[in-house]
Amino acid sequence: MENFVVSARKYRPDRFDTVVGQEHVVQTLKNAIKNRHLAHAFLFCGPRGVGKTTSARLLAKTINCTNLSADFEACNTCDSCRAFNSNASFNIYELDAASNNSVDDIRGLVDQVRYAPQGAQYKIYIIDEVHMLSASAFNAFLKTLEEPPPYAKFILATTEKHKILPTILSRCQVFDFHRIKIDDAVKQLKKICESENIQVEEEALHVIGKKADGAMRDALSIFDRIVSFSGNKITYADVISNLNILDYDYYFRATNLLLSGNIAGSLLLFDEILNNGFEAQHFLQGFSEHIRNLMVCKHPDTLKLLEVAPNVASKFGQQSGTCSSSWLLNALNLLNQTDFNYKLSKNQRLHVELALMKLCNLQRVIQISTQQPMVDEKKKINLSTGTSTNSENTISKETISVQPKVTALVADLPSNESIGSPKSAIEKMKEQIALQKQQEQTAKLENNEEPEEKIENKDFTQETFLTIWNSYINNLENGGKSRISVFLKESPVKFLDPLKVEIELKSQLEHETMDEEWMEMLPFLRKQLQNTLLEVVFSVNKERVQTGTRVSKTDQLKQMVDKNPLLGDFVQGLGLEIDY
Image (cartoon, rainbow, N blue to C red):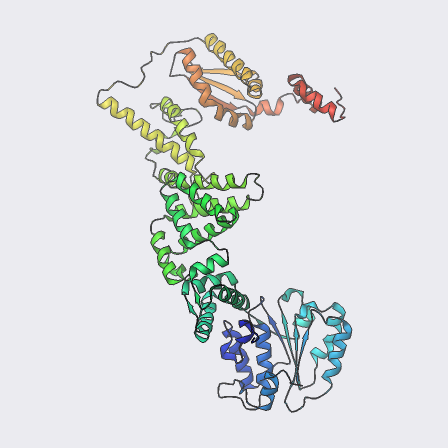
């Protein structure tokens, strides 16, 4: 049986013009050879599998070639080239610093530098993974690296440039190798397929190039694996099946379902993905990249960032036209947050499903939030009091009926504020729905229709209000909101006019709490007093905050224990002591 040679070795470049994706390095080295401006030490840096060691060996072979071509490539026919190609050259030494990193190894190399080359112009030393040398080995190498004999050349290669001592870096000519682009990897794989008489779909090669993540050696290894799986005909389906990659079609289908608000279809598609053996986080990361690709299709200048096959690129372009930039940006933000919190979730499937349900409602929320509110600046609604800033227009009743609709939509938002909008989406929705309700009431009055509710407002006294107010506080305490009832009992009540009451609070925190409680409080008071014109406003009295009696932590704890005896049992169970 003939010995199999992997593609990474079989198709290893033997000339500078066959090096993939490193044109900037190749051109510089060829110019240096042409002009005879060769440094005595080179340092090749870059990710794994991008051609550092290959370029080092090509440089060593070329500068010792006695019959350079017109484009300054090695001839491969002279004695030096033939010796190098057969691994029998006495003038080129390769040292793997990963396993030869001691001081003695470097001293042995330094001793060899003393001897002149045999039948060649230079003696070249290639040290791979040079960052693995110990500090002592580096120091032993410094003097020779700085002032070597004129015939000695050093070529160092590393994947971790930051681990090289600055004293070494300063003595070398540094070349940074790039990650291999997907298009460059695809071109190289096409050449190999033509050479091996393998039929292949271009889309399949793009998947291999993307999976390699910038390493040509990895791309060739994956290619060999796929050939072993598929034979002489490689298809896109075979590649995604062998590499366990989600098909593009899943993401296109998922996007269409989310844009149409199809929650059931989205959940079923996600279930299908899980049943096919894919991890939920794998789907999240792939879908985030899909949304990113749709975003880059929005502008001609960013199309070059789309690294997919031409037929897939056309699909992205078509679907991108159906998505707004606002939707894509909010969806990408939500997916990123979901991915970030995935590991922290105890129910990871539900965590992803919840994100999909939010994305299904995202289109509707954005449509509402991005509509321009038509509320006049002089008649803006004060949502904390339920009244208009214009004393001639009171629409608190309409605001109350609108609030539950707004609350129901809040869960649809991916974040507290709509990205790229100066106003929060919630505020925009409040204004829009309030305006719509007001316009409906106005239309009914113009058509001589009766209002939805016609209540006869009755007068009430301050004593009556205080009685109802105390009843409301008692209801809070009985309903499990004792914290609110406590500070409301201590809050003075002021009558600004017969229909307007002010409640003085001690802090901004209390004010924010009552902003939320206000929607339940005001309807209760109006119903009990039988007067829909009642207004209740809240204010923070700074003097009360500054001059109020401070309650010690011990007294606070005692009050808490009195209200909840279980807390005292808990403290005693921990063996703590409470000094009353």
